[in-house]
Structures are given as C-alpha cells and as structure tokens.
Length: 232
Image (tube, rainbow, N blue to C red; front, top):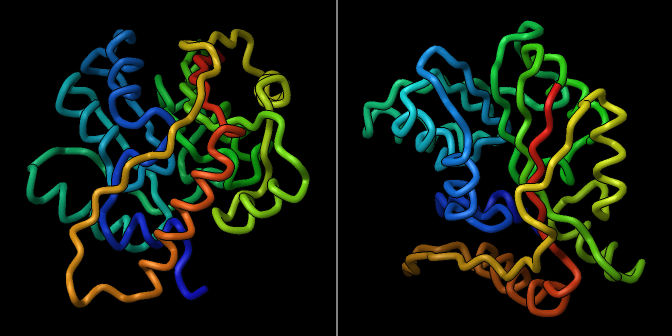
C-alpha cells in the first residue's frame, strides 16, 4: 500500500484523530494552570490543533514537534495564516532536539504506540523541568486476539499495544513519580474523518480510508483510551 494511515491524515489535513478527539484535549488542558512564562512541548503534534489551542488560549510559549513532512508543511501554512507564534521543530520523540529540563509541560497524544515507548518516555522525562508535567492521551488494548493485534499493528504502523497496567508500569520505569488518570479507561469510538471528496483524490487514499473504517468497525470495541497526568 503506497500510503499509510498517517499519510491519509496528512494529505487531508485531518487533526485530532487521537483518542477522544479535540473535545477531550480541551477538557484536559482547561484543568491545568498554564502561565505565560511556561514552555510547553507538543510531541507528534500533527496538524497542530492542540499546540495552536494552547498558544492562543493560555498565551504561553509552545513548541510543536513533528516528523511527517506533509504535517510540517501544514503546520507552517497554518502558523502563517493564523499568525500564531508557536515554534515548529522537525524531529522525533525518541531523540528530542532539546536540552534537558527545558519544558514545564509535555503533551503526548496518540503517539507512544507508534514509537519506541521506553526511549520516548525517557526523552520526555529528560526535557521536563523538575516537577514538570507530562500529559499522555493514549489508546490501550483490551481482550484482543493475537491475530487481531497483528492486523491492527500492521495497518496503523503500531509498534506495540499496551493495556493500562503495562502502560503505567513503563511510565513509572521512566522515572515519573505520580501518575493520575483524568478519566477512567473508556471505549474509543471510531474517530469521524471529514474529507471533502474531489475527482482528483488518489484512489489508493480512499482504499486506506475504507480499510480504516472496516478495522474500526471490527476491532473498535477492543481499543480504549486513557488520559494520564504524570509528574516528574
């Protein structure tokens, strides 16, 4: 398949495809006390919904880190259009291009399953200031067969699927001392994808979309979501 699921999101500039969508992100962020002098890092920020929201709502310094070239192009265009002073950096969460203890907050949404989770958590811990906060919004698995796991992982490019206990243990191993859920684990409904269809759409992209809808219908009941607040 020439396109991946992430390519689909990038090509159609789809934001907030993470667990719970943008509404959950806003509900979580509104419970935090952001101050103007604070530095916030959104790792794997995609098209920037969360990063731009934080910058506009709380007026603090926001850095959006992204690796996908189409996403980066969209971020640059959006920054120019909206005249929002977020900083856009190309890079990966496994090797963050920042000095240690730089950020007050790190936001990580629907990313850990797609990367080397241990390295990613270690890097998030490293760049956080003492007593800094990592907010994780991540999918977790429940009662999924080995065959279904492999189907899910292959299509979405997932490296590893975790249940809640496994995820928390890995966060603790990275050094975080307090891990508190914002919400109990909740079913993860298929995320609606709003695409304006035109005659010029590559049929292969539509094939990716159709496969996504099919997998969500078949396996969505086995995927849940959780939001965790972790303190360094």
